[in-house]
Image 1 (tube, rainbow, N blue to C red):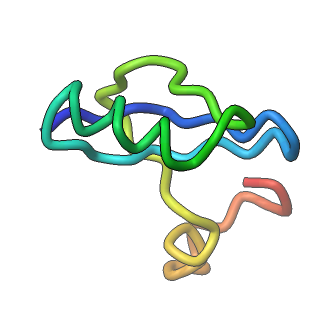
Image 2 (image 1 turned 180 degrees about the vertical axis):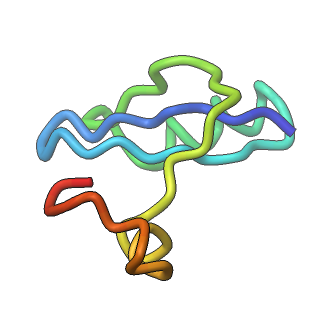
Length: 64
């Protein structure tokens, strides 16, 4: 599995997605359209706000 950061150019949102191969990534990018860009392969994990808020003791403030 490879992970890529995918940028939505319209909203500025970035999400990390896993793909089986470079070919799988290429096909996915063709389907979702030109408003999205695969930034780079990443080893990090970007948790959603829902995941970050599960432990409220670790909450660092809005925007964390």
